[in-house]
Image (cartoon, rainbow, N blue to C red; front, side, top):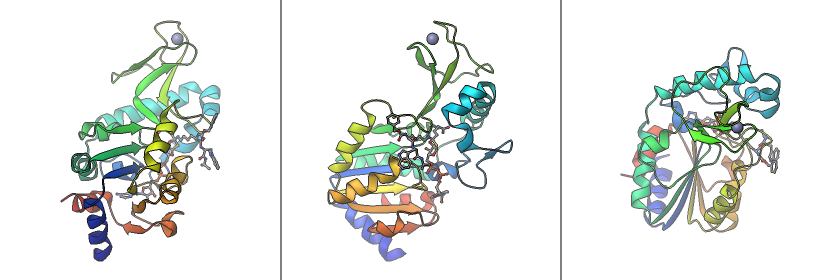
Length: 239
Ligand code: BJW
Ligand code: ZN
């Protein structure tokens, strides 16, 4: 609704501390498939069934094939107006933090610097045994090996049942608790702990805003729920 959009714009222009949480929906306009949408299937497998440690333990070659396919796909994608608008918001707001669940790296490419990649990155790999970890954008072999100890490498992402990297959740909680405005953009709000961040913000008095193509389980609890494409709505908010 236009009136809501104008109100959110006014709230943002007076805000000092803003935290934005993003999900796969902000990258869908760049051509990156979402997880739970119709495009969330790869070779008959649901992405959610592959992004898990038990799948990797049972079929590392299948899981690596999936991640190498995604690295190839995402490597050709470019940031869209939603990513650029969030990079612009960072310049406009005195204290800003962008927390993304996305592993595609597109926020960084769009220029966002106050960025937390809470589920890791497709462009990071780490050893399943030793502490070796590195950024790597090159084409990887089918099941890449650690150059230090020779064991299997794994994608540097957070799978279901795994904890976030130490310190990440603590910092997120600290910043969300102090926010004047909390934005939840392009996420289905089904995966924890991200899905509960808005509640923390709300409990600490923030204005909460959701931007999504469709309602989510959290929509009814938000102060504002703007329905539409992130790539259409976000640029309006930072004009
Ligand atoms: C648009 C749009 C457009 C489209 N514009 N919008 C409490 C209760 C129950 C369960 C749990 C719980 N706490 C933890 C759990 C378990 C689990 C969990 O949440 N399970 C639920 C499914 C129930 N959580 C975890 O396991 C987490 N770990 C954890 O909590 O650890 C605790 C622990 C402590 C100590 C020791 C051990 C453990 C980790 C979660 C990791 C999630 N990982 C993944 C994969 C990352 C790697 C990869 O990419 O391969 O992260 S799963 C996947 O889901 C990915 C995403 O980041 C995440 C969220 O998905 P997202 O972004 O919301 O995408 P979609 O597709 O669901 O939604 C897209 C949305 O966009 C839709 O709403 C569209 O409408 C919208 N949209 N186009 C605007 N143009
Ligand atoms: Zn190693």
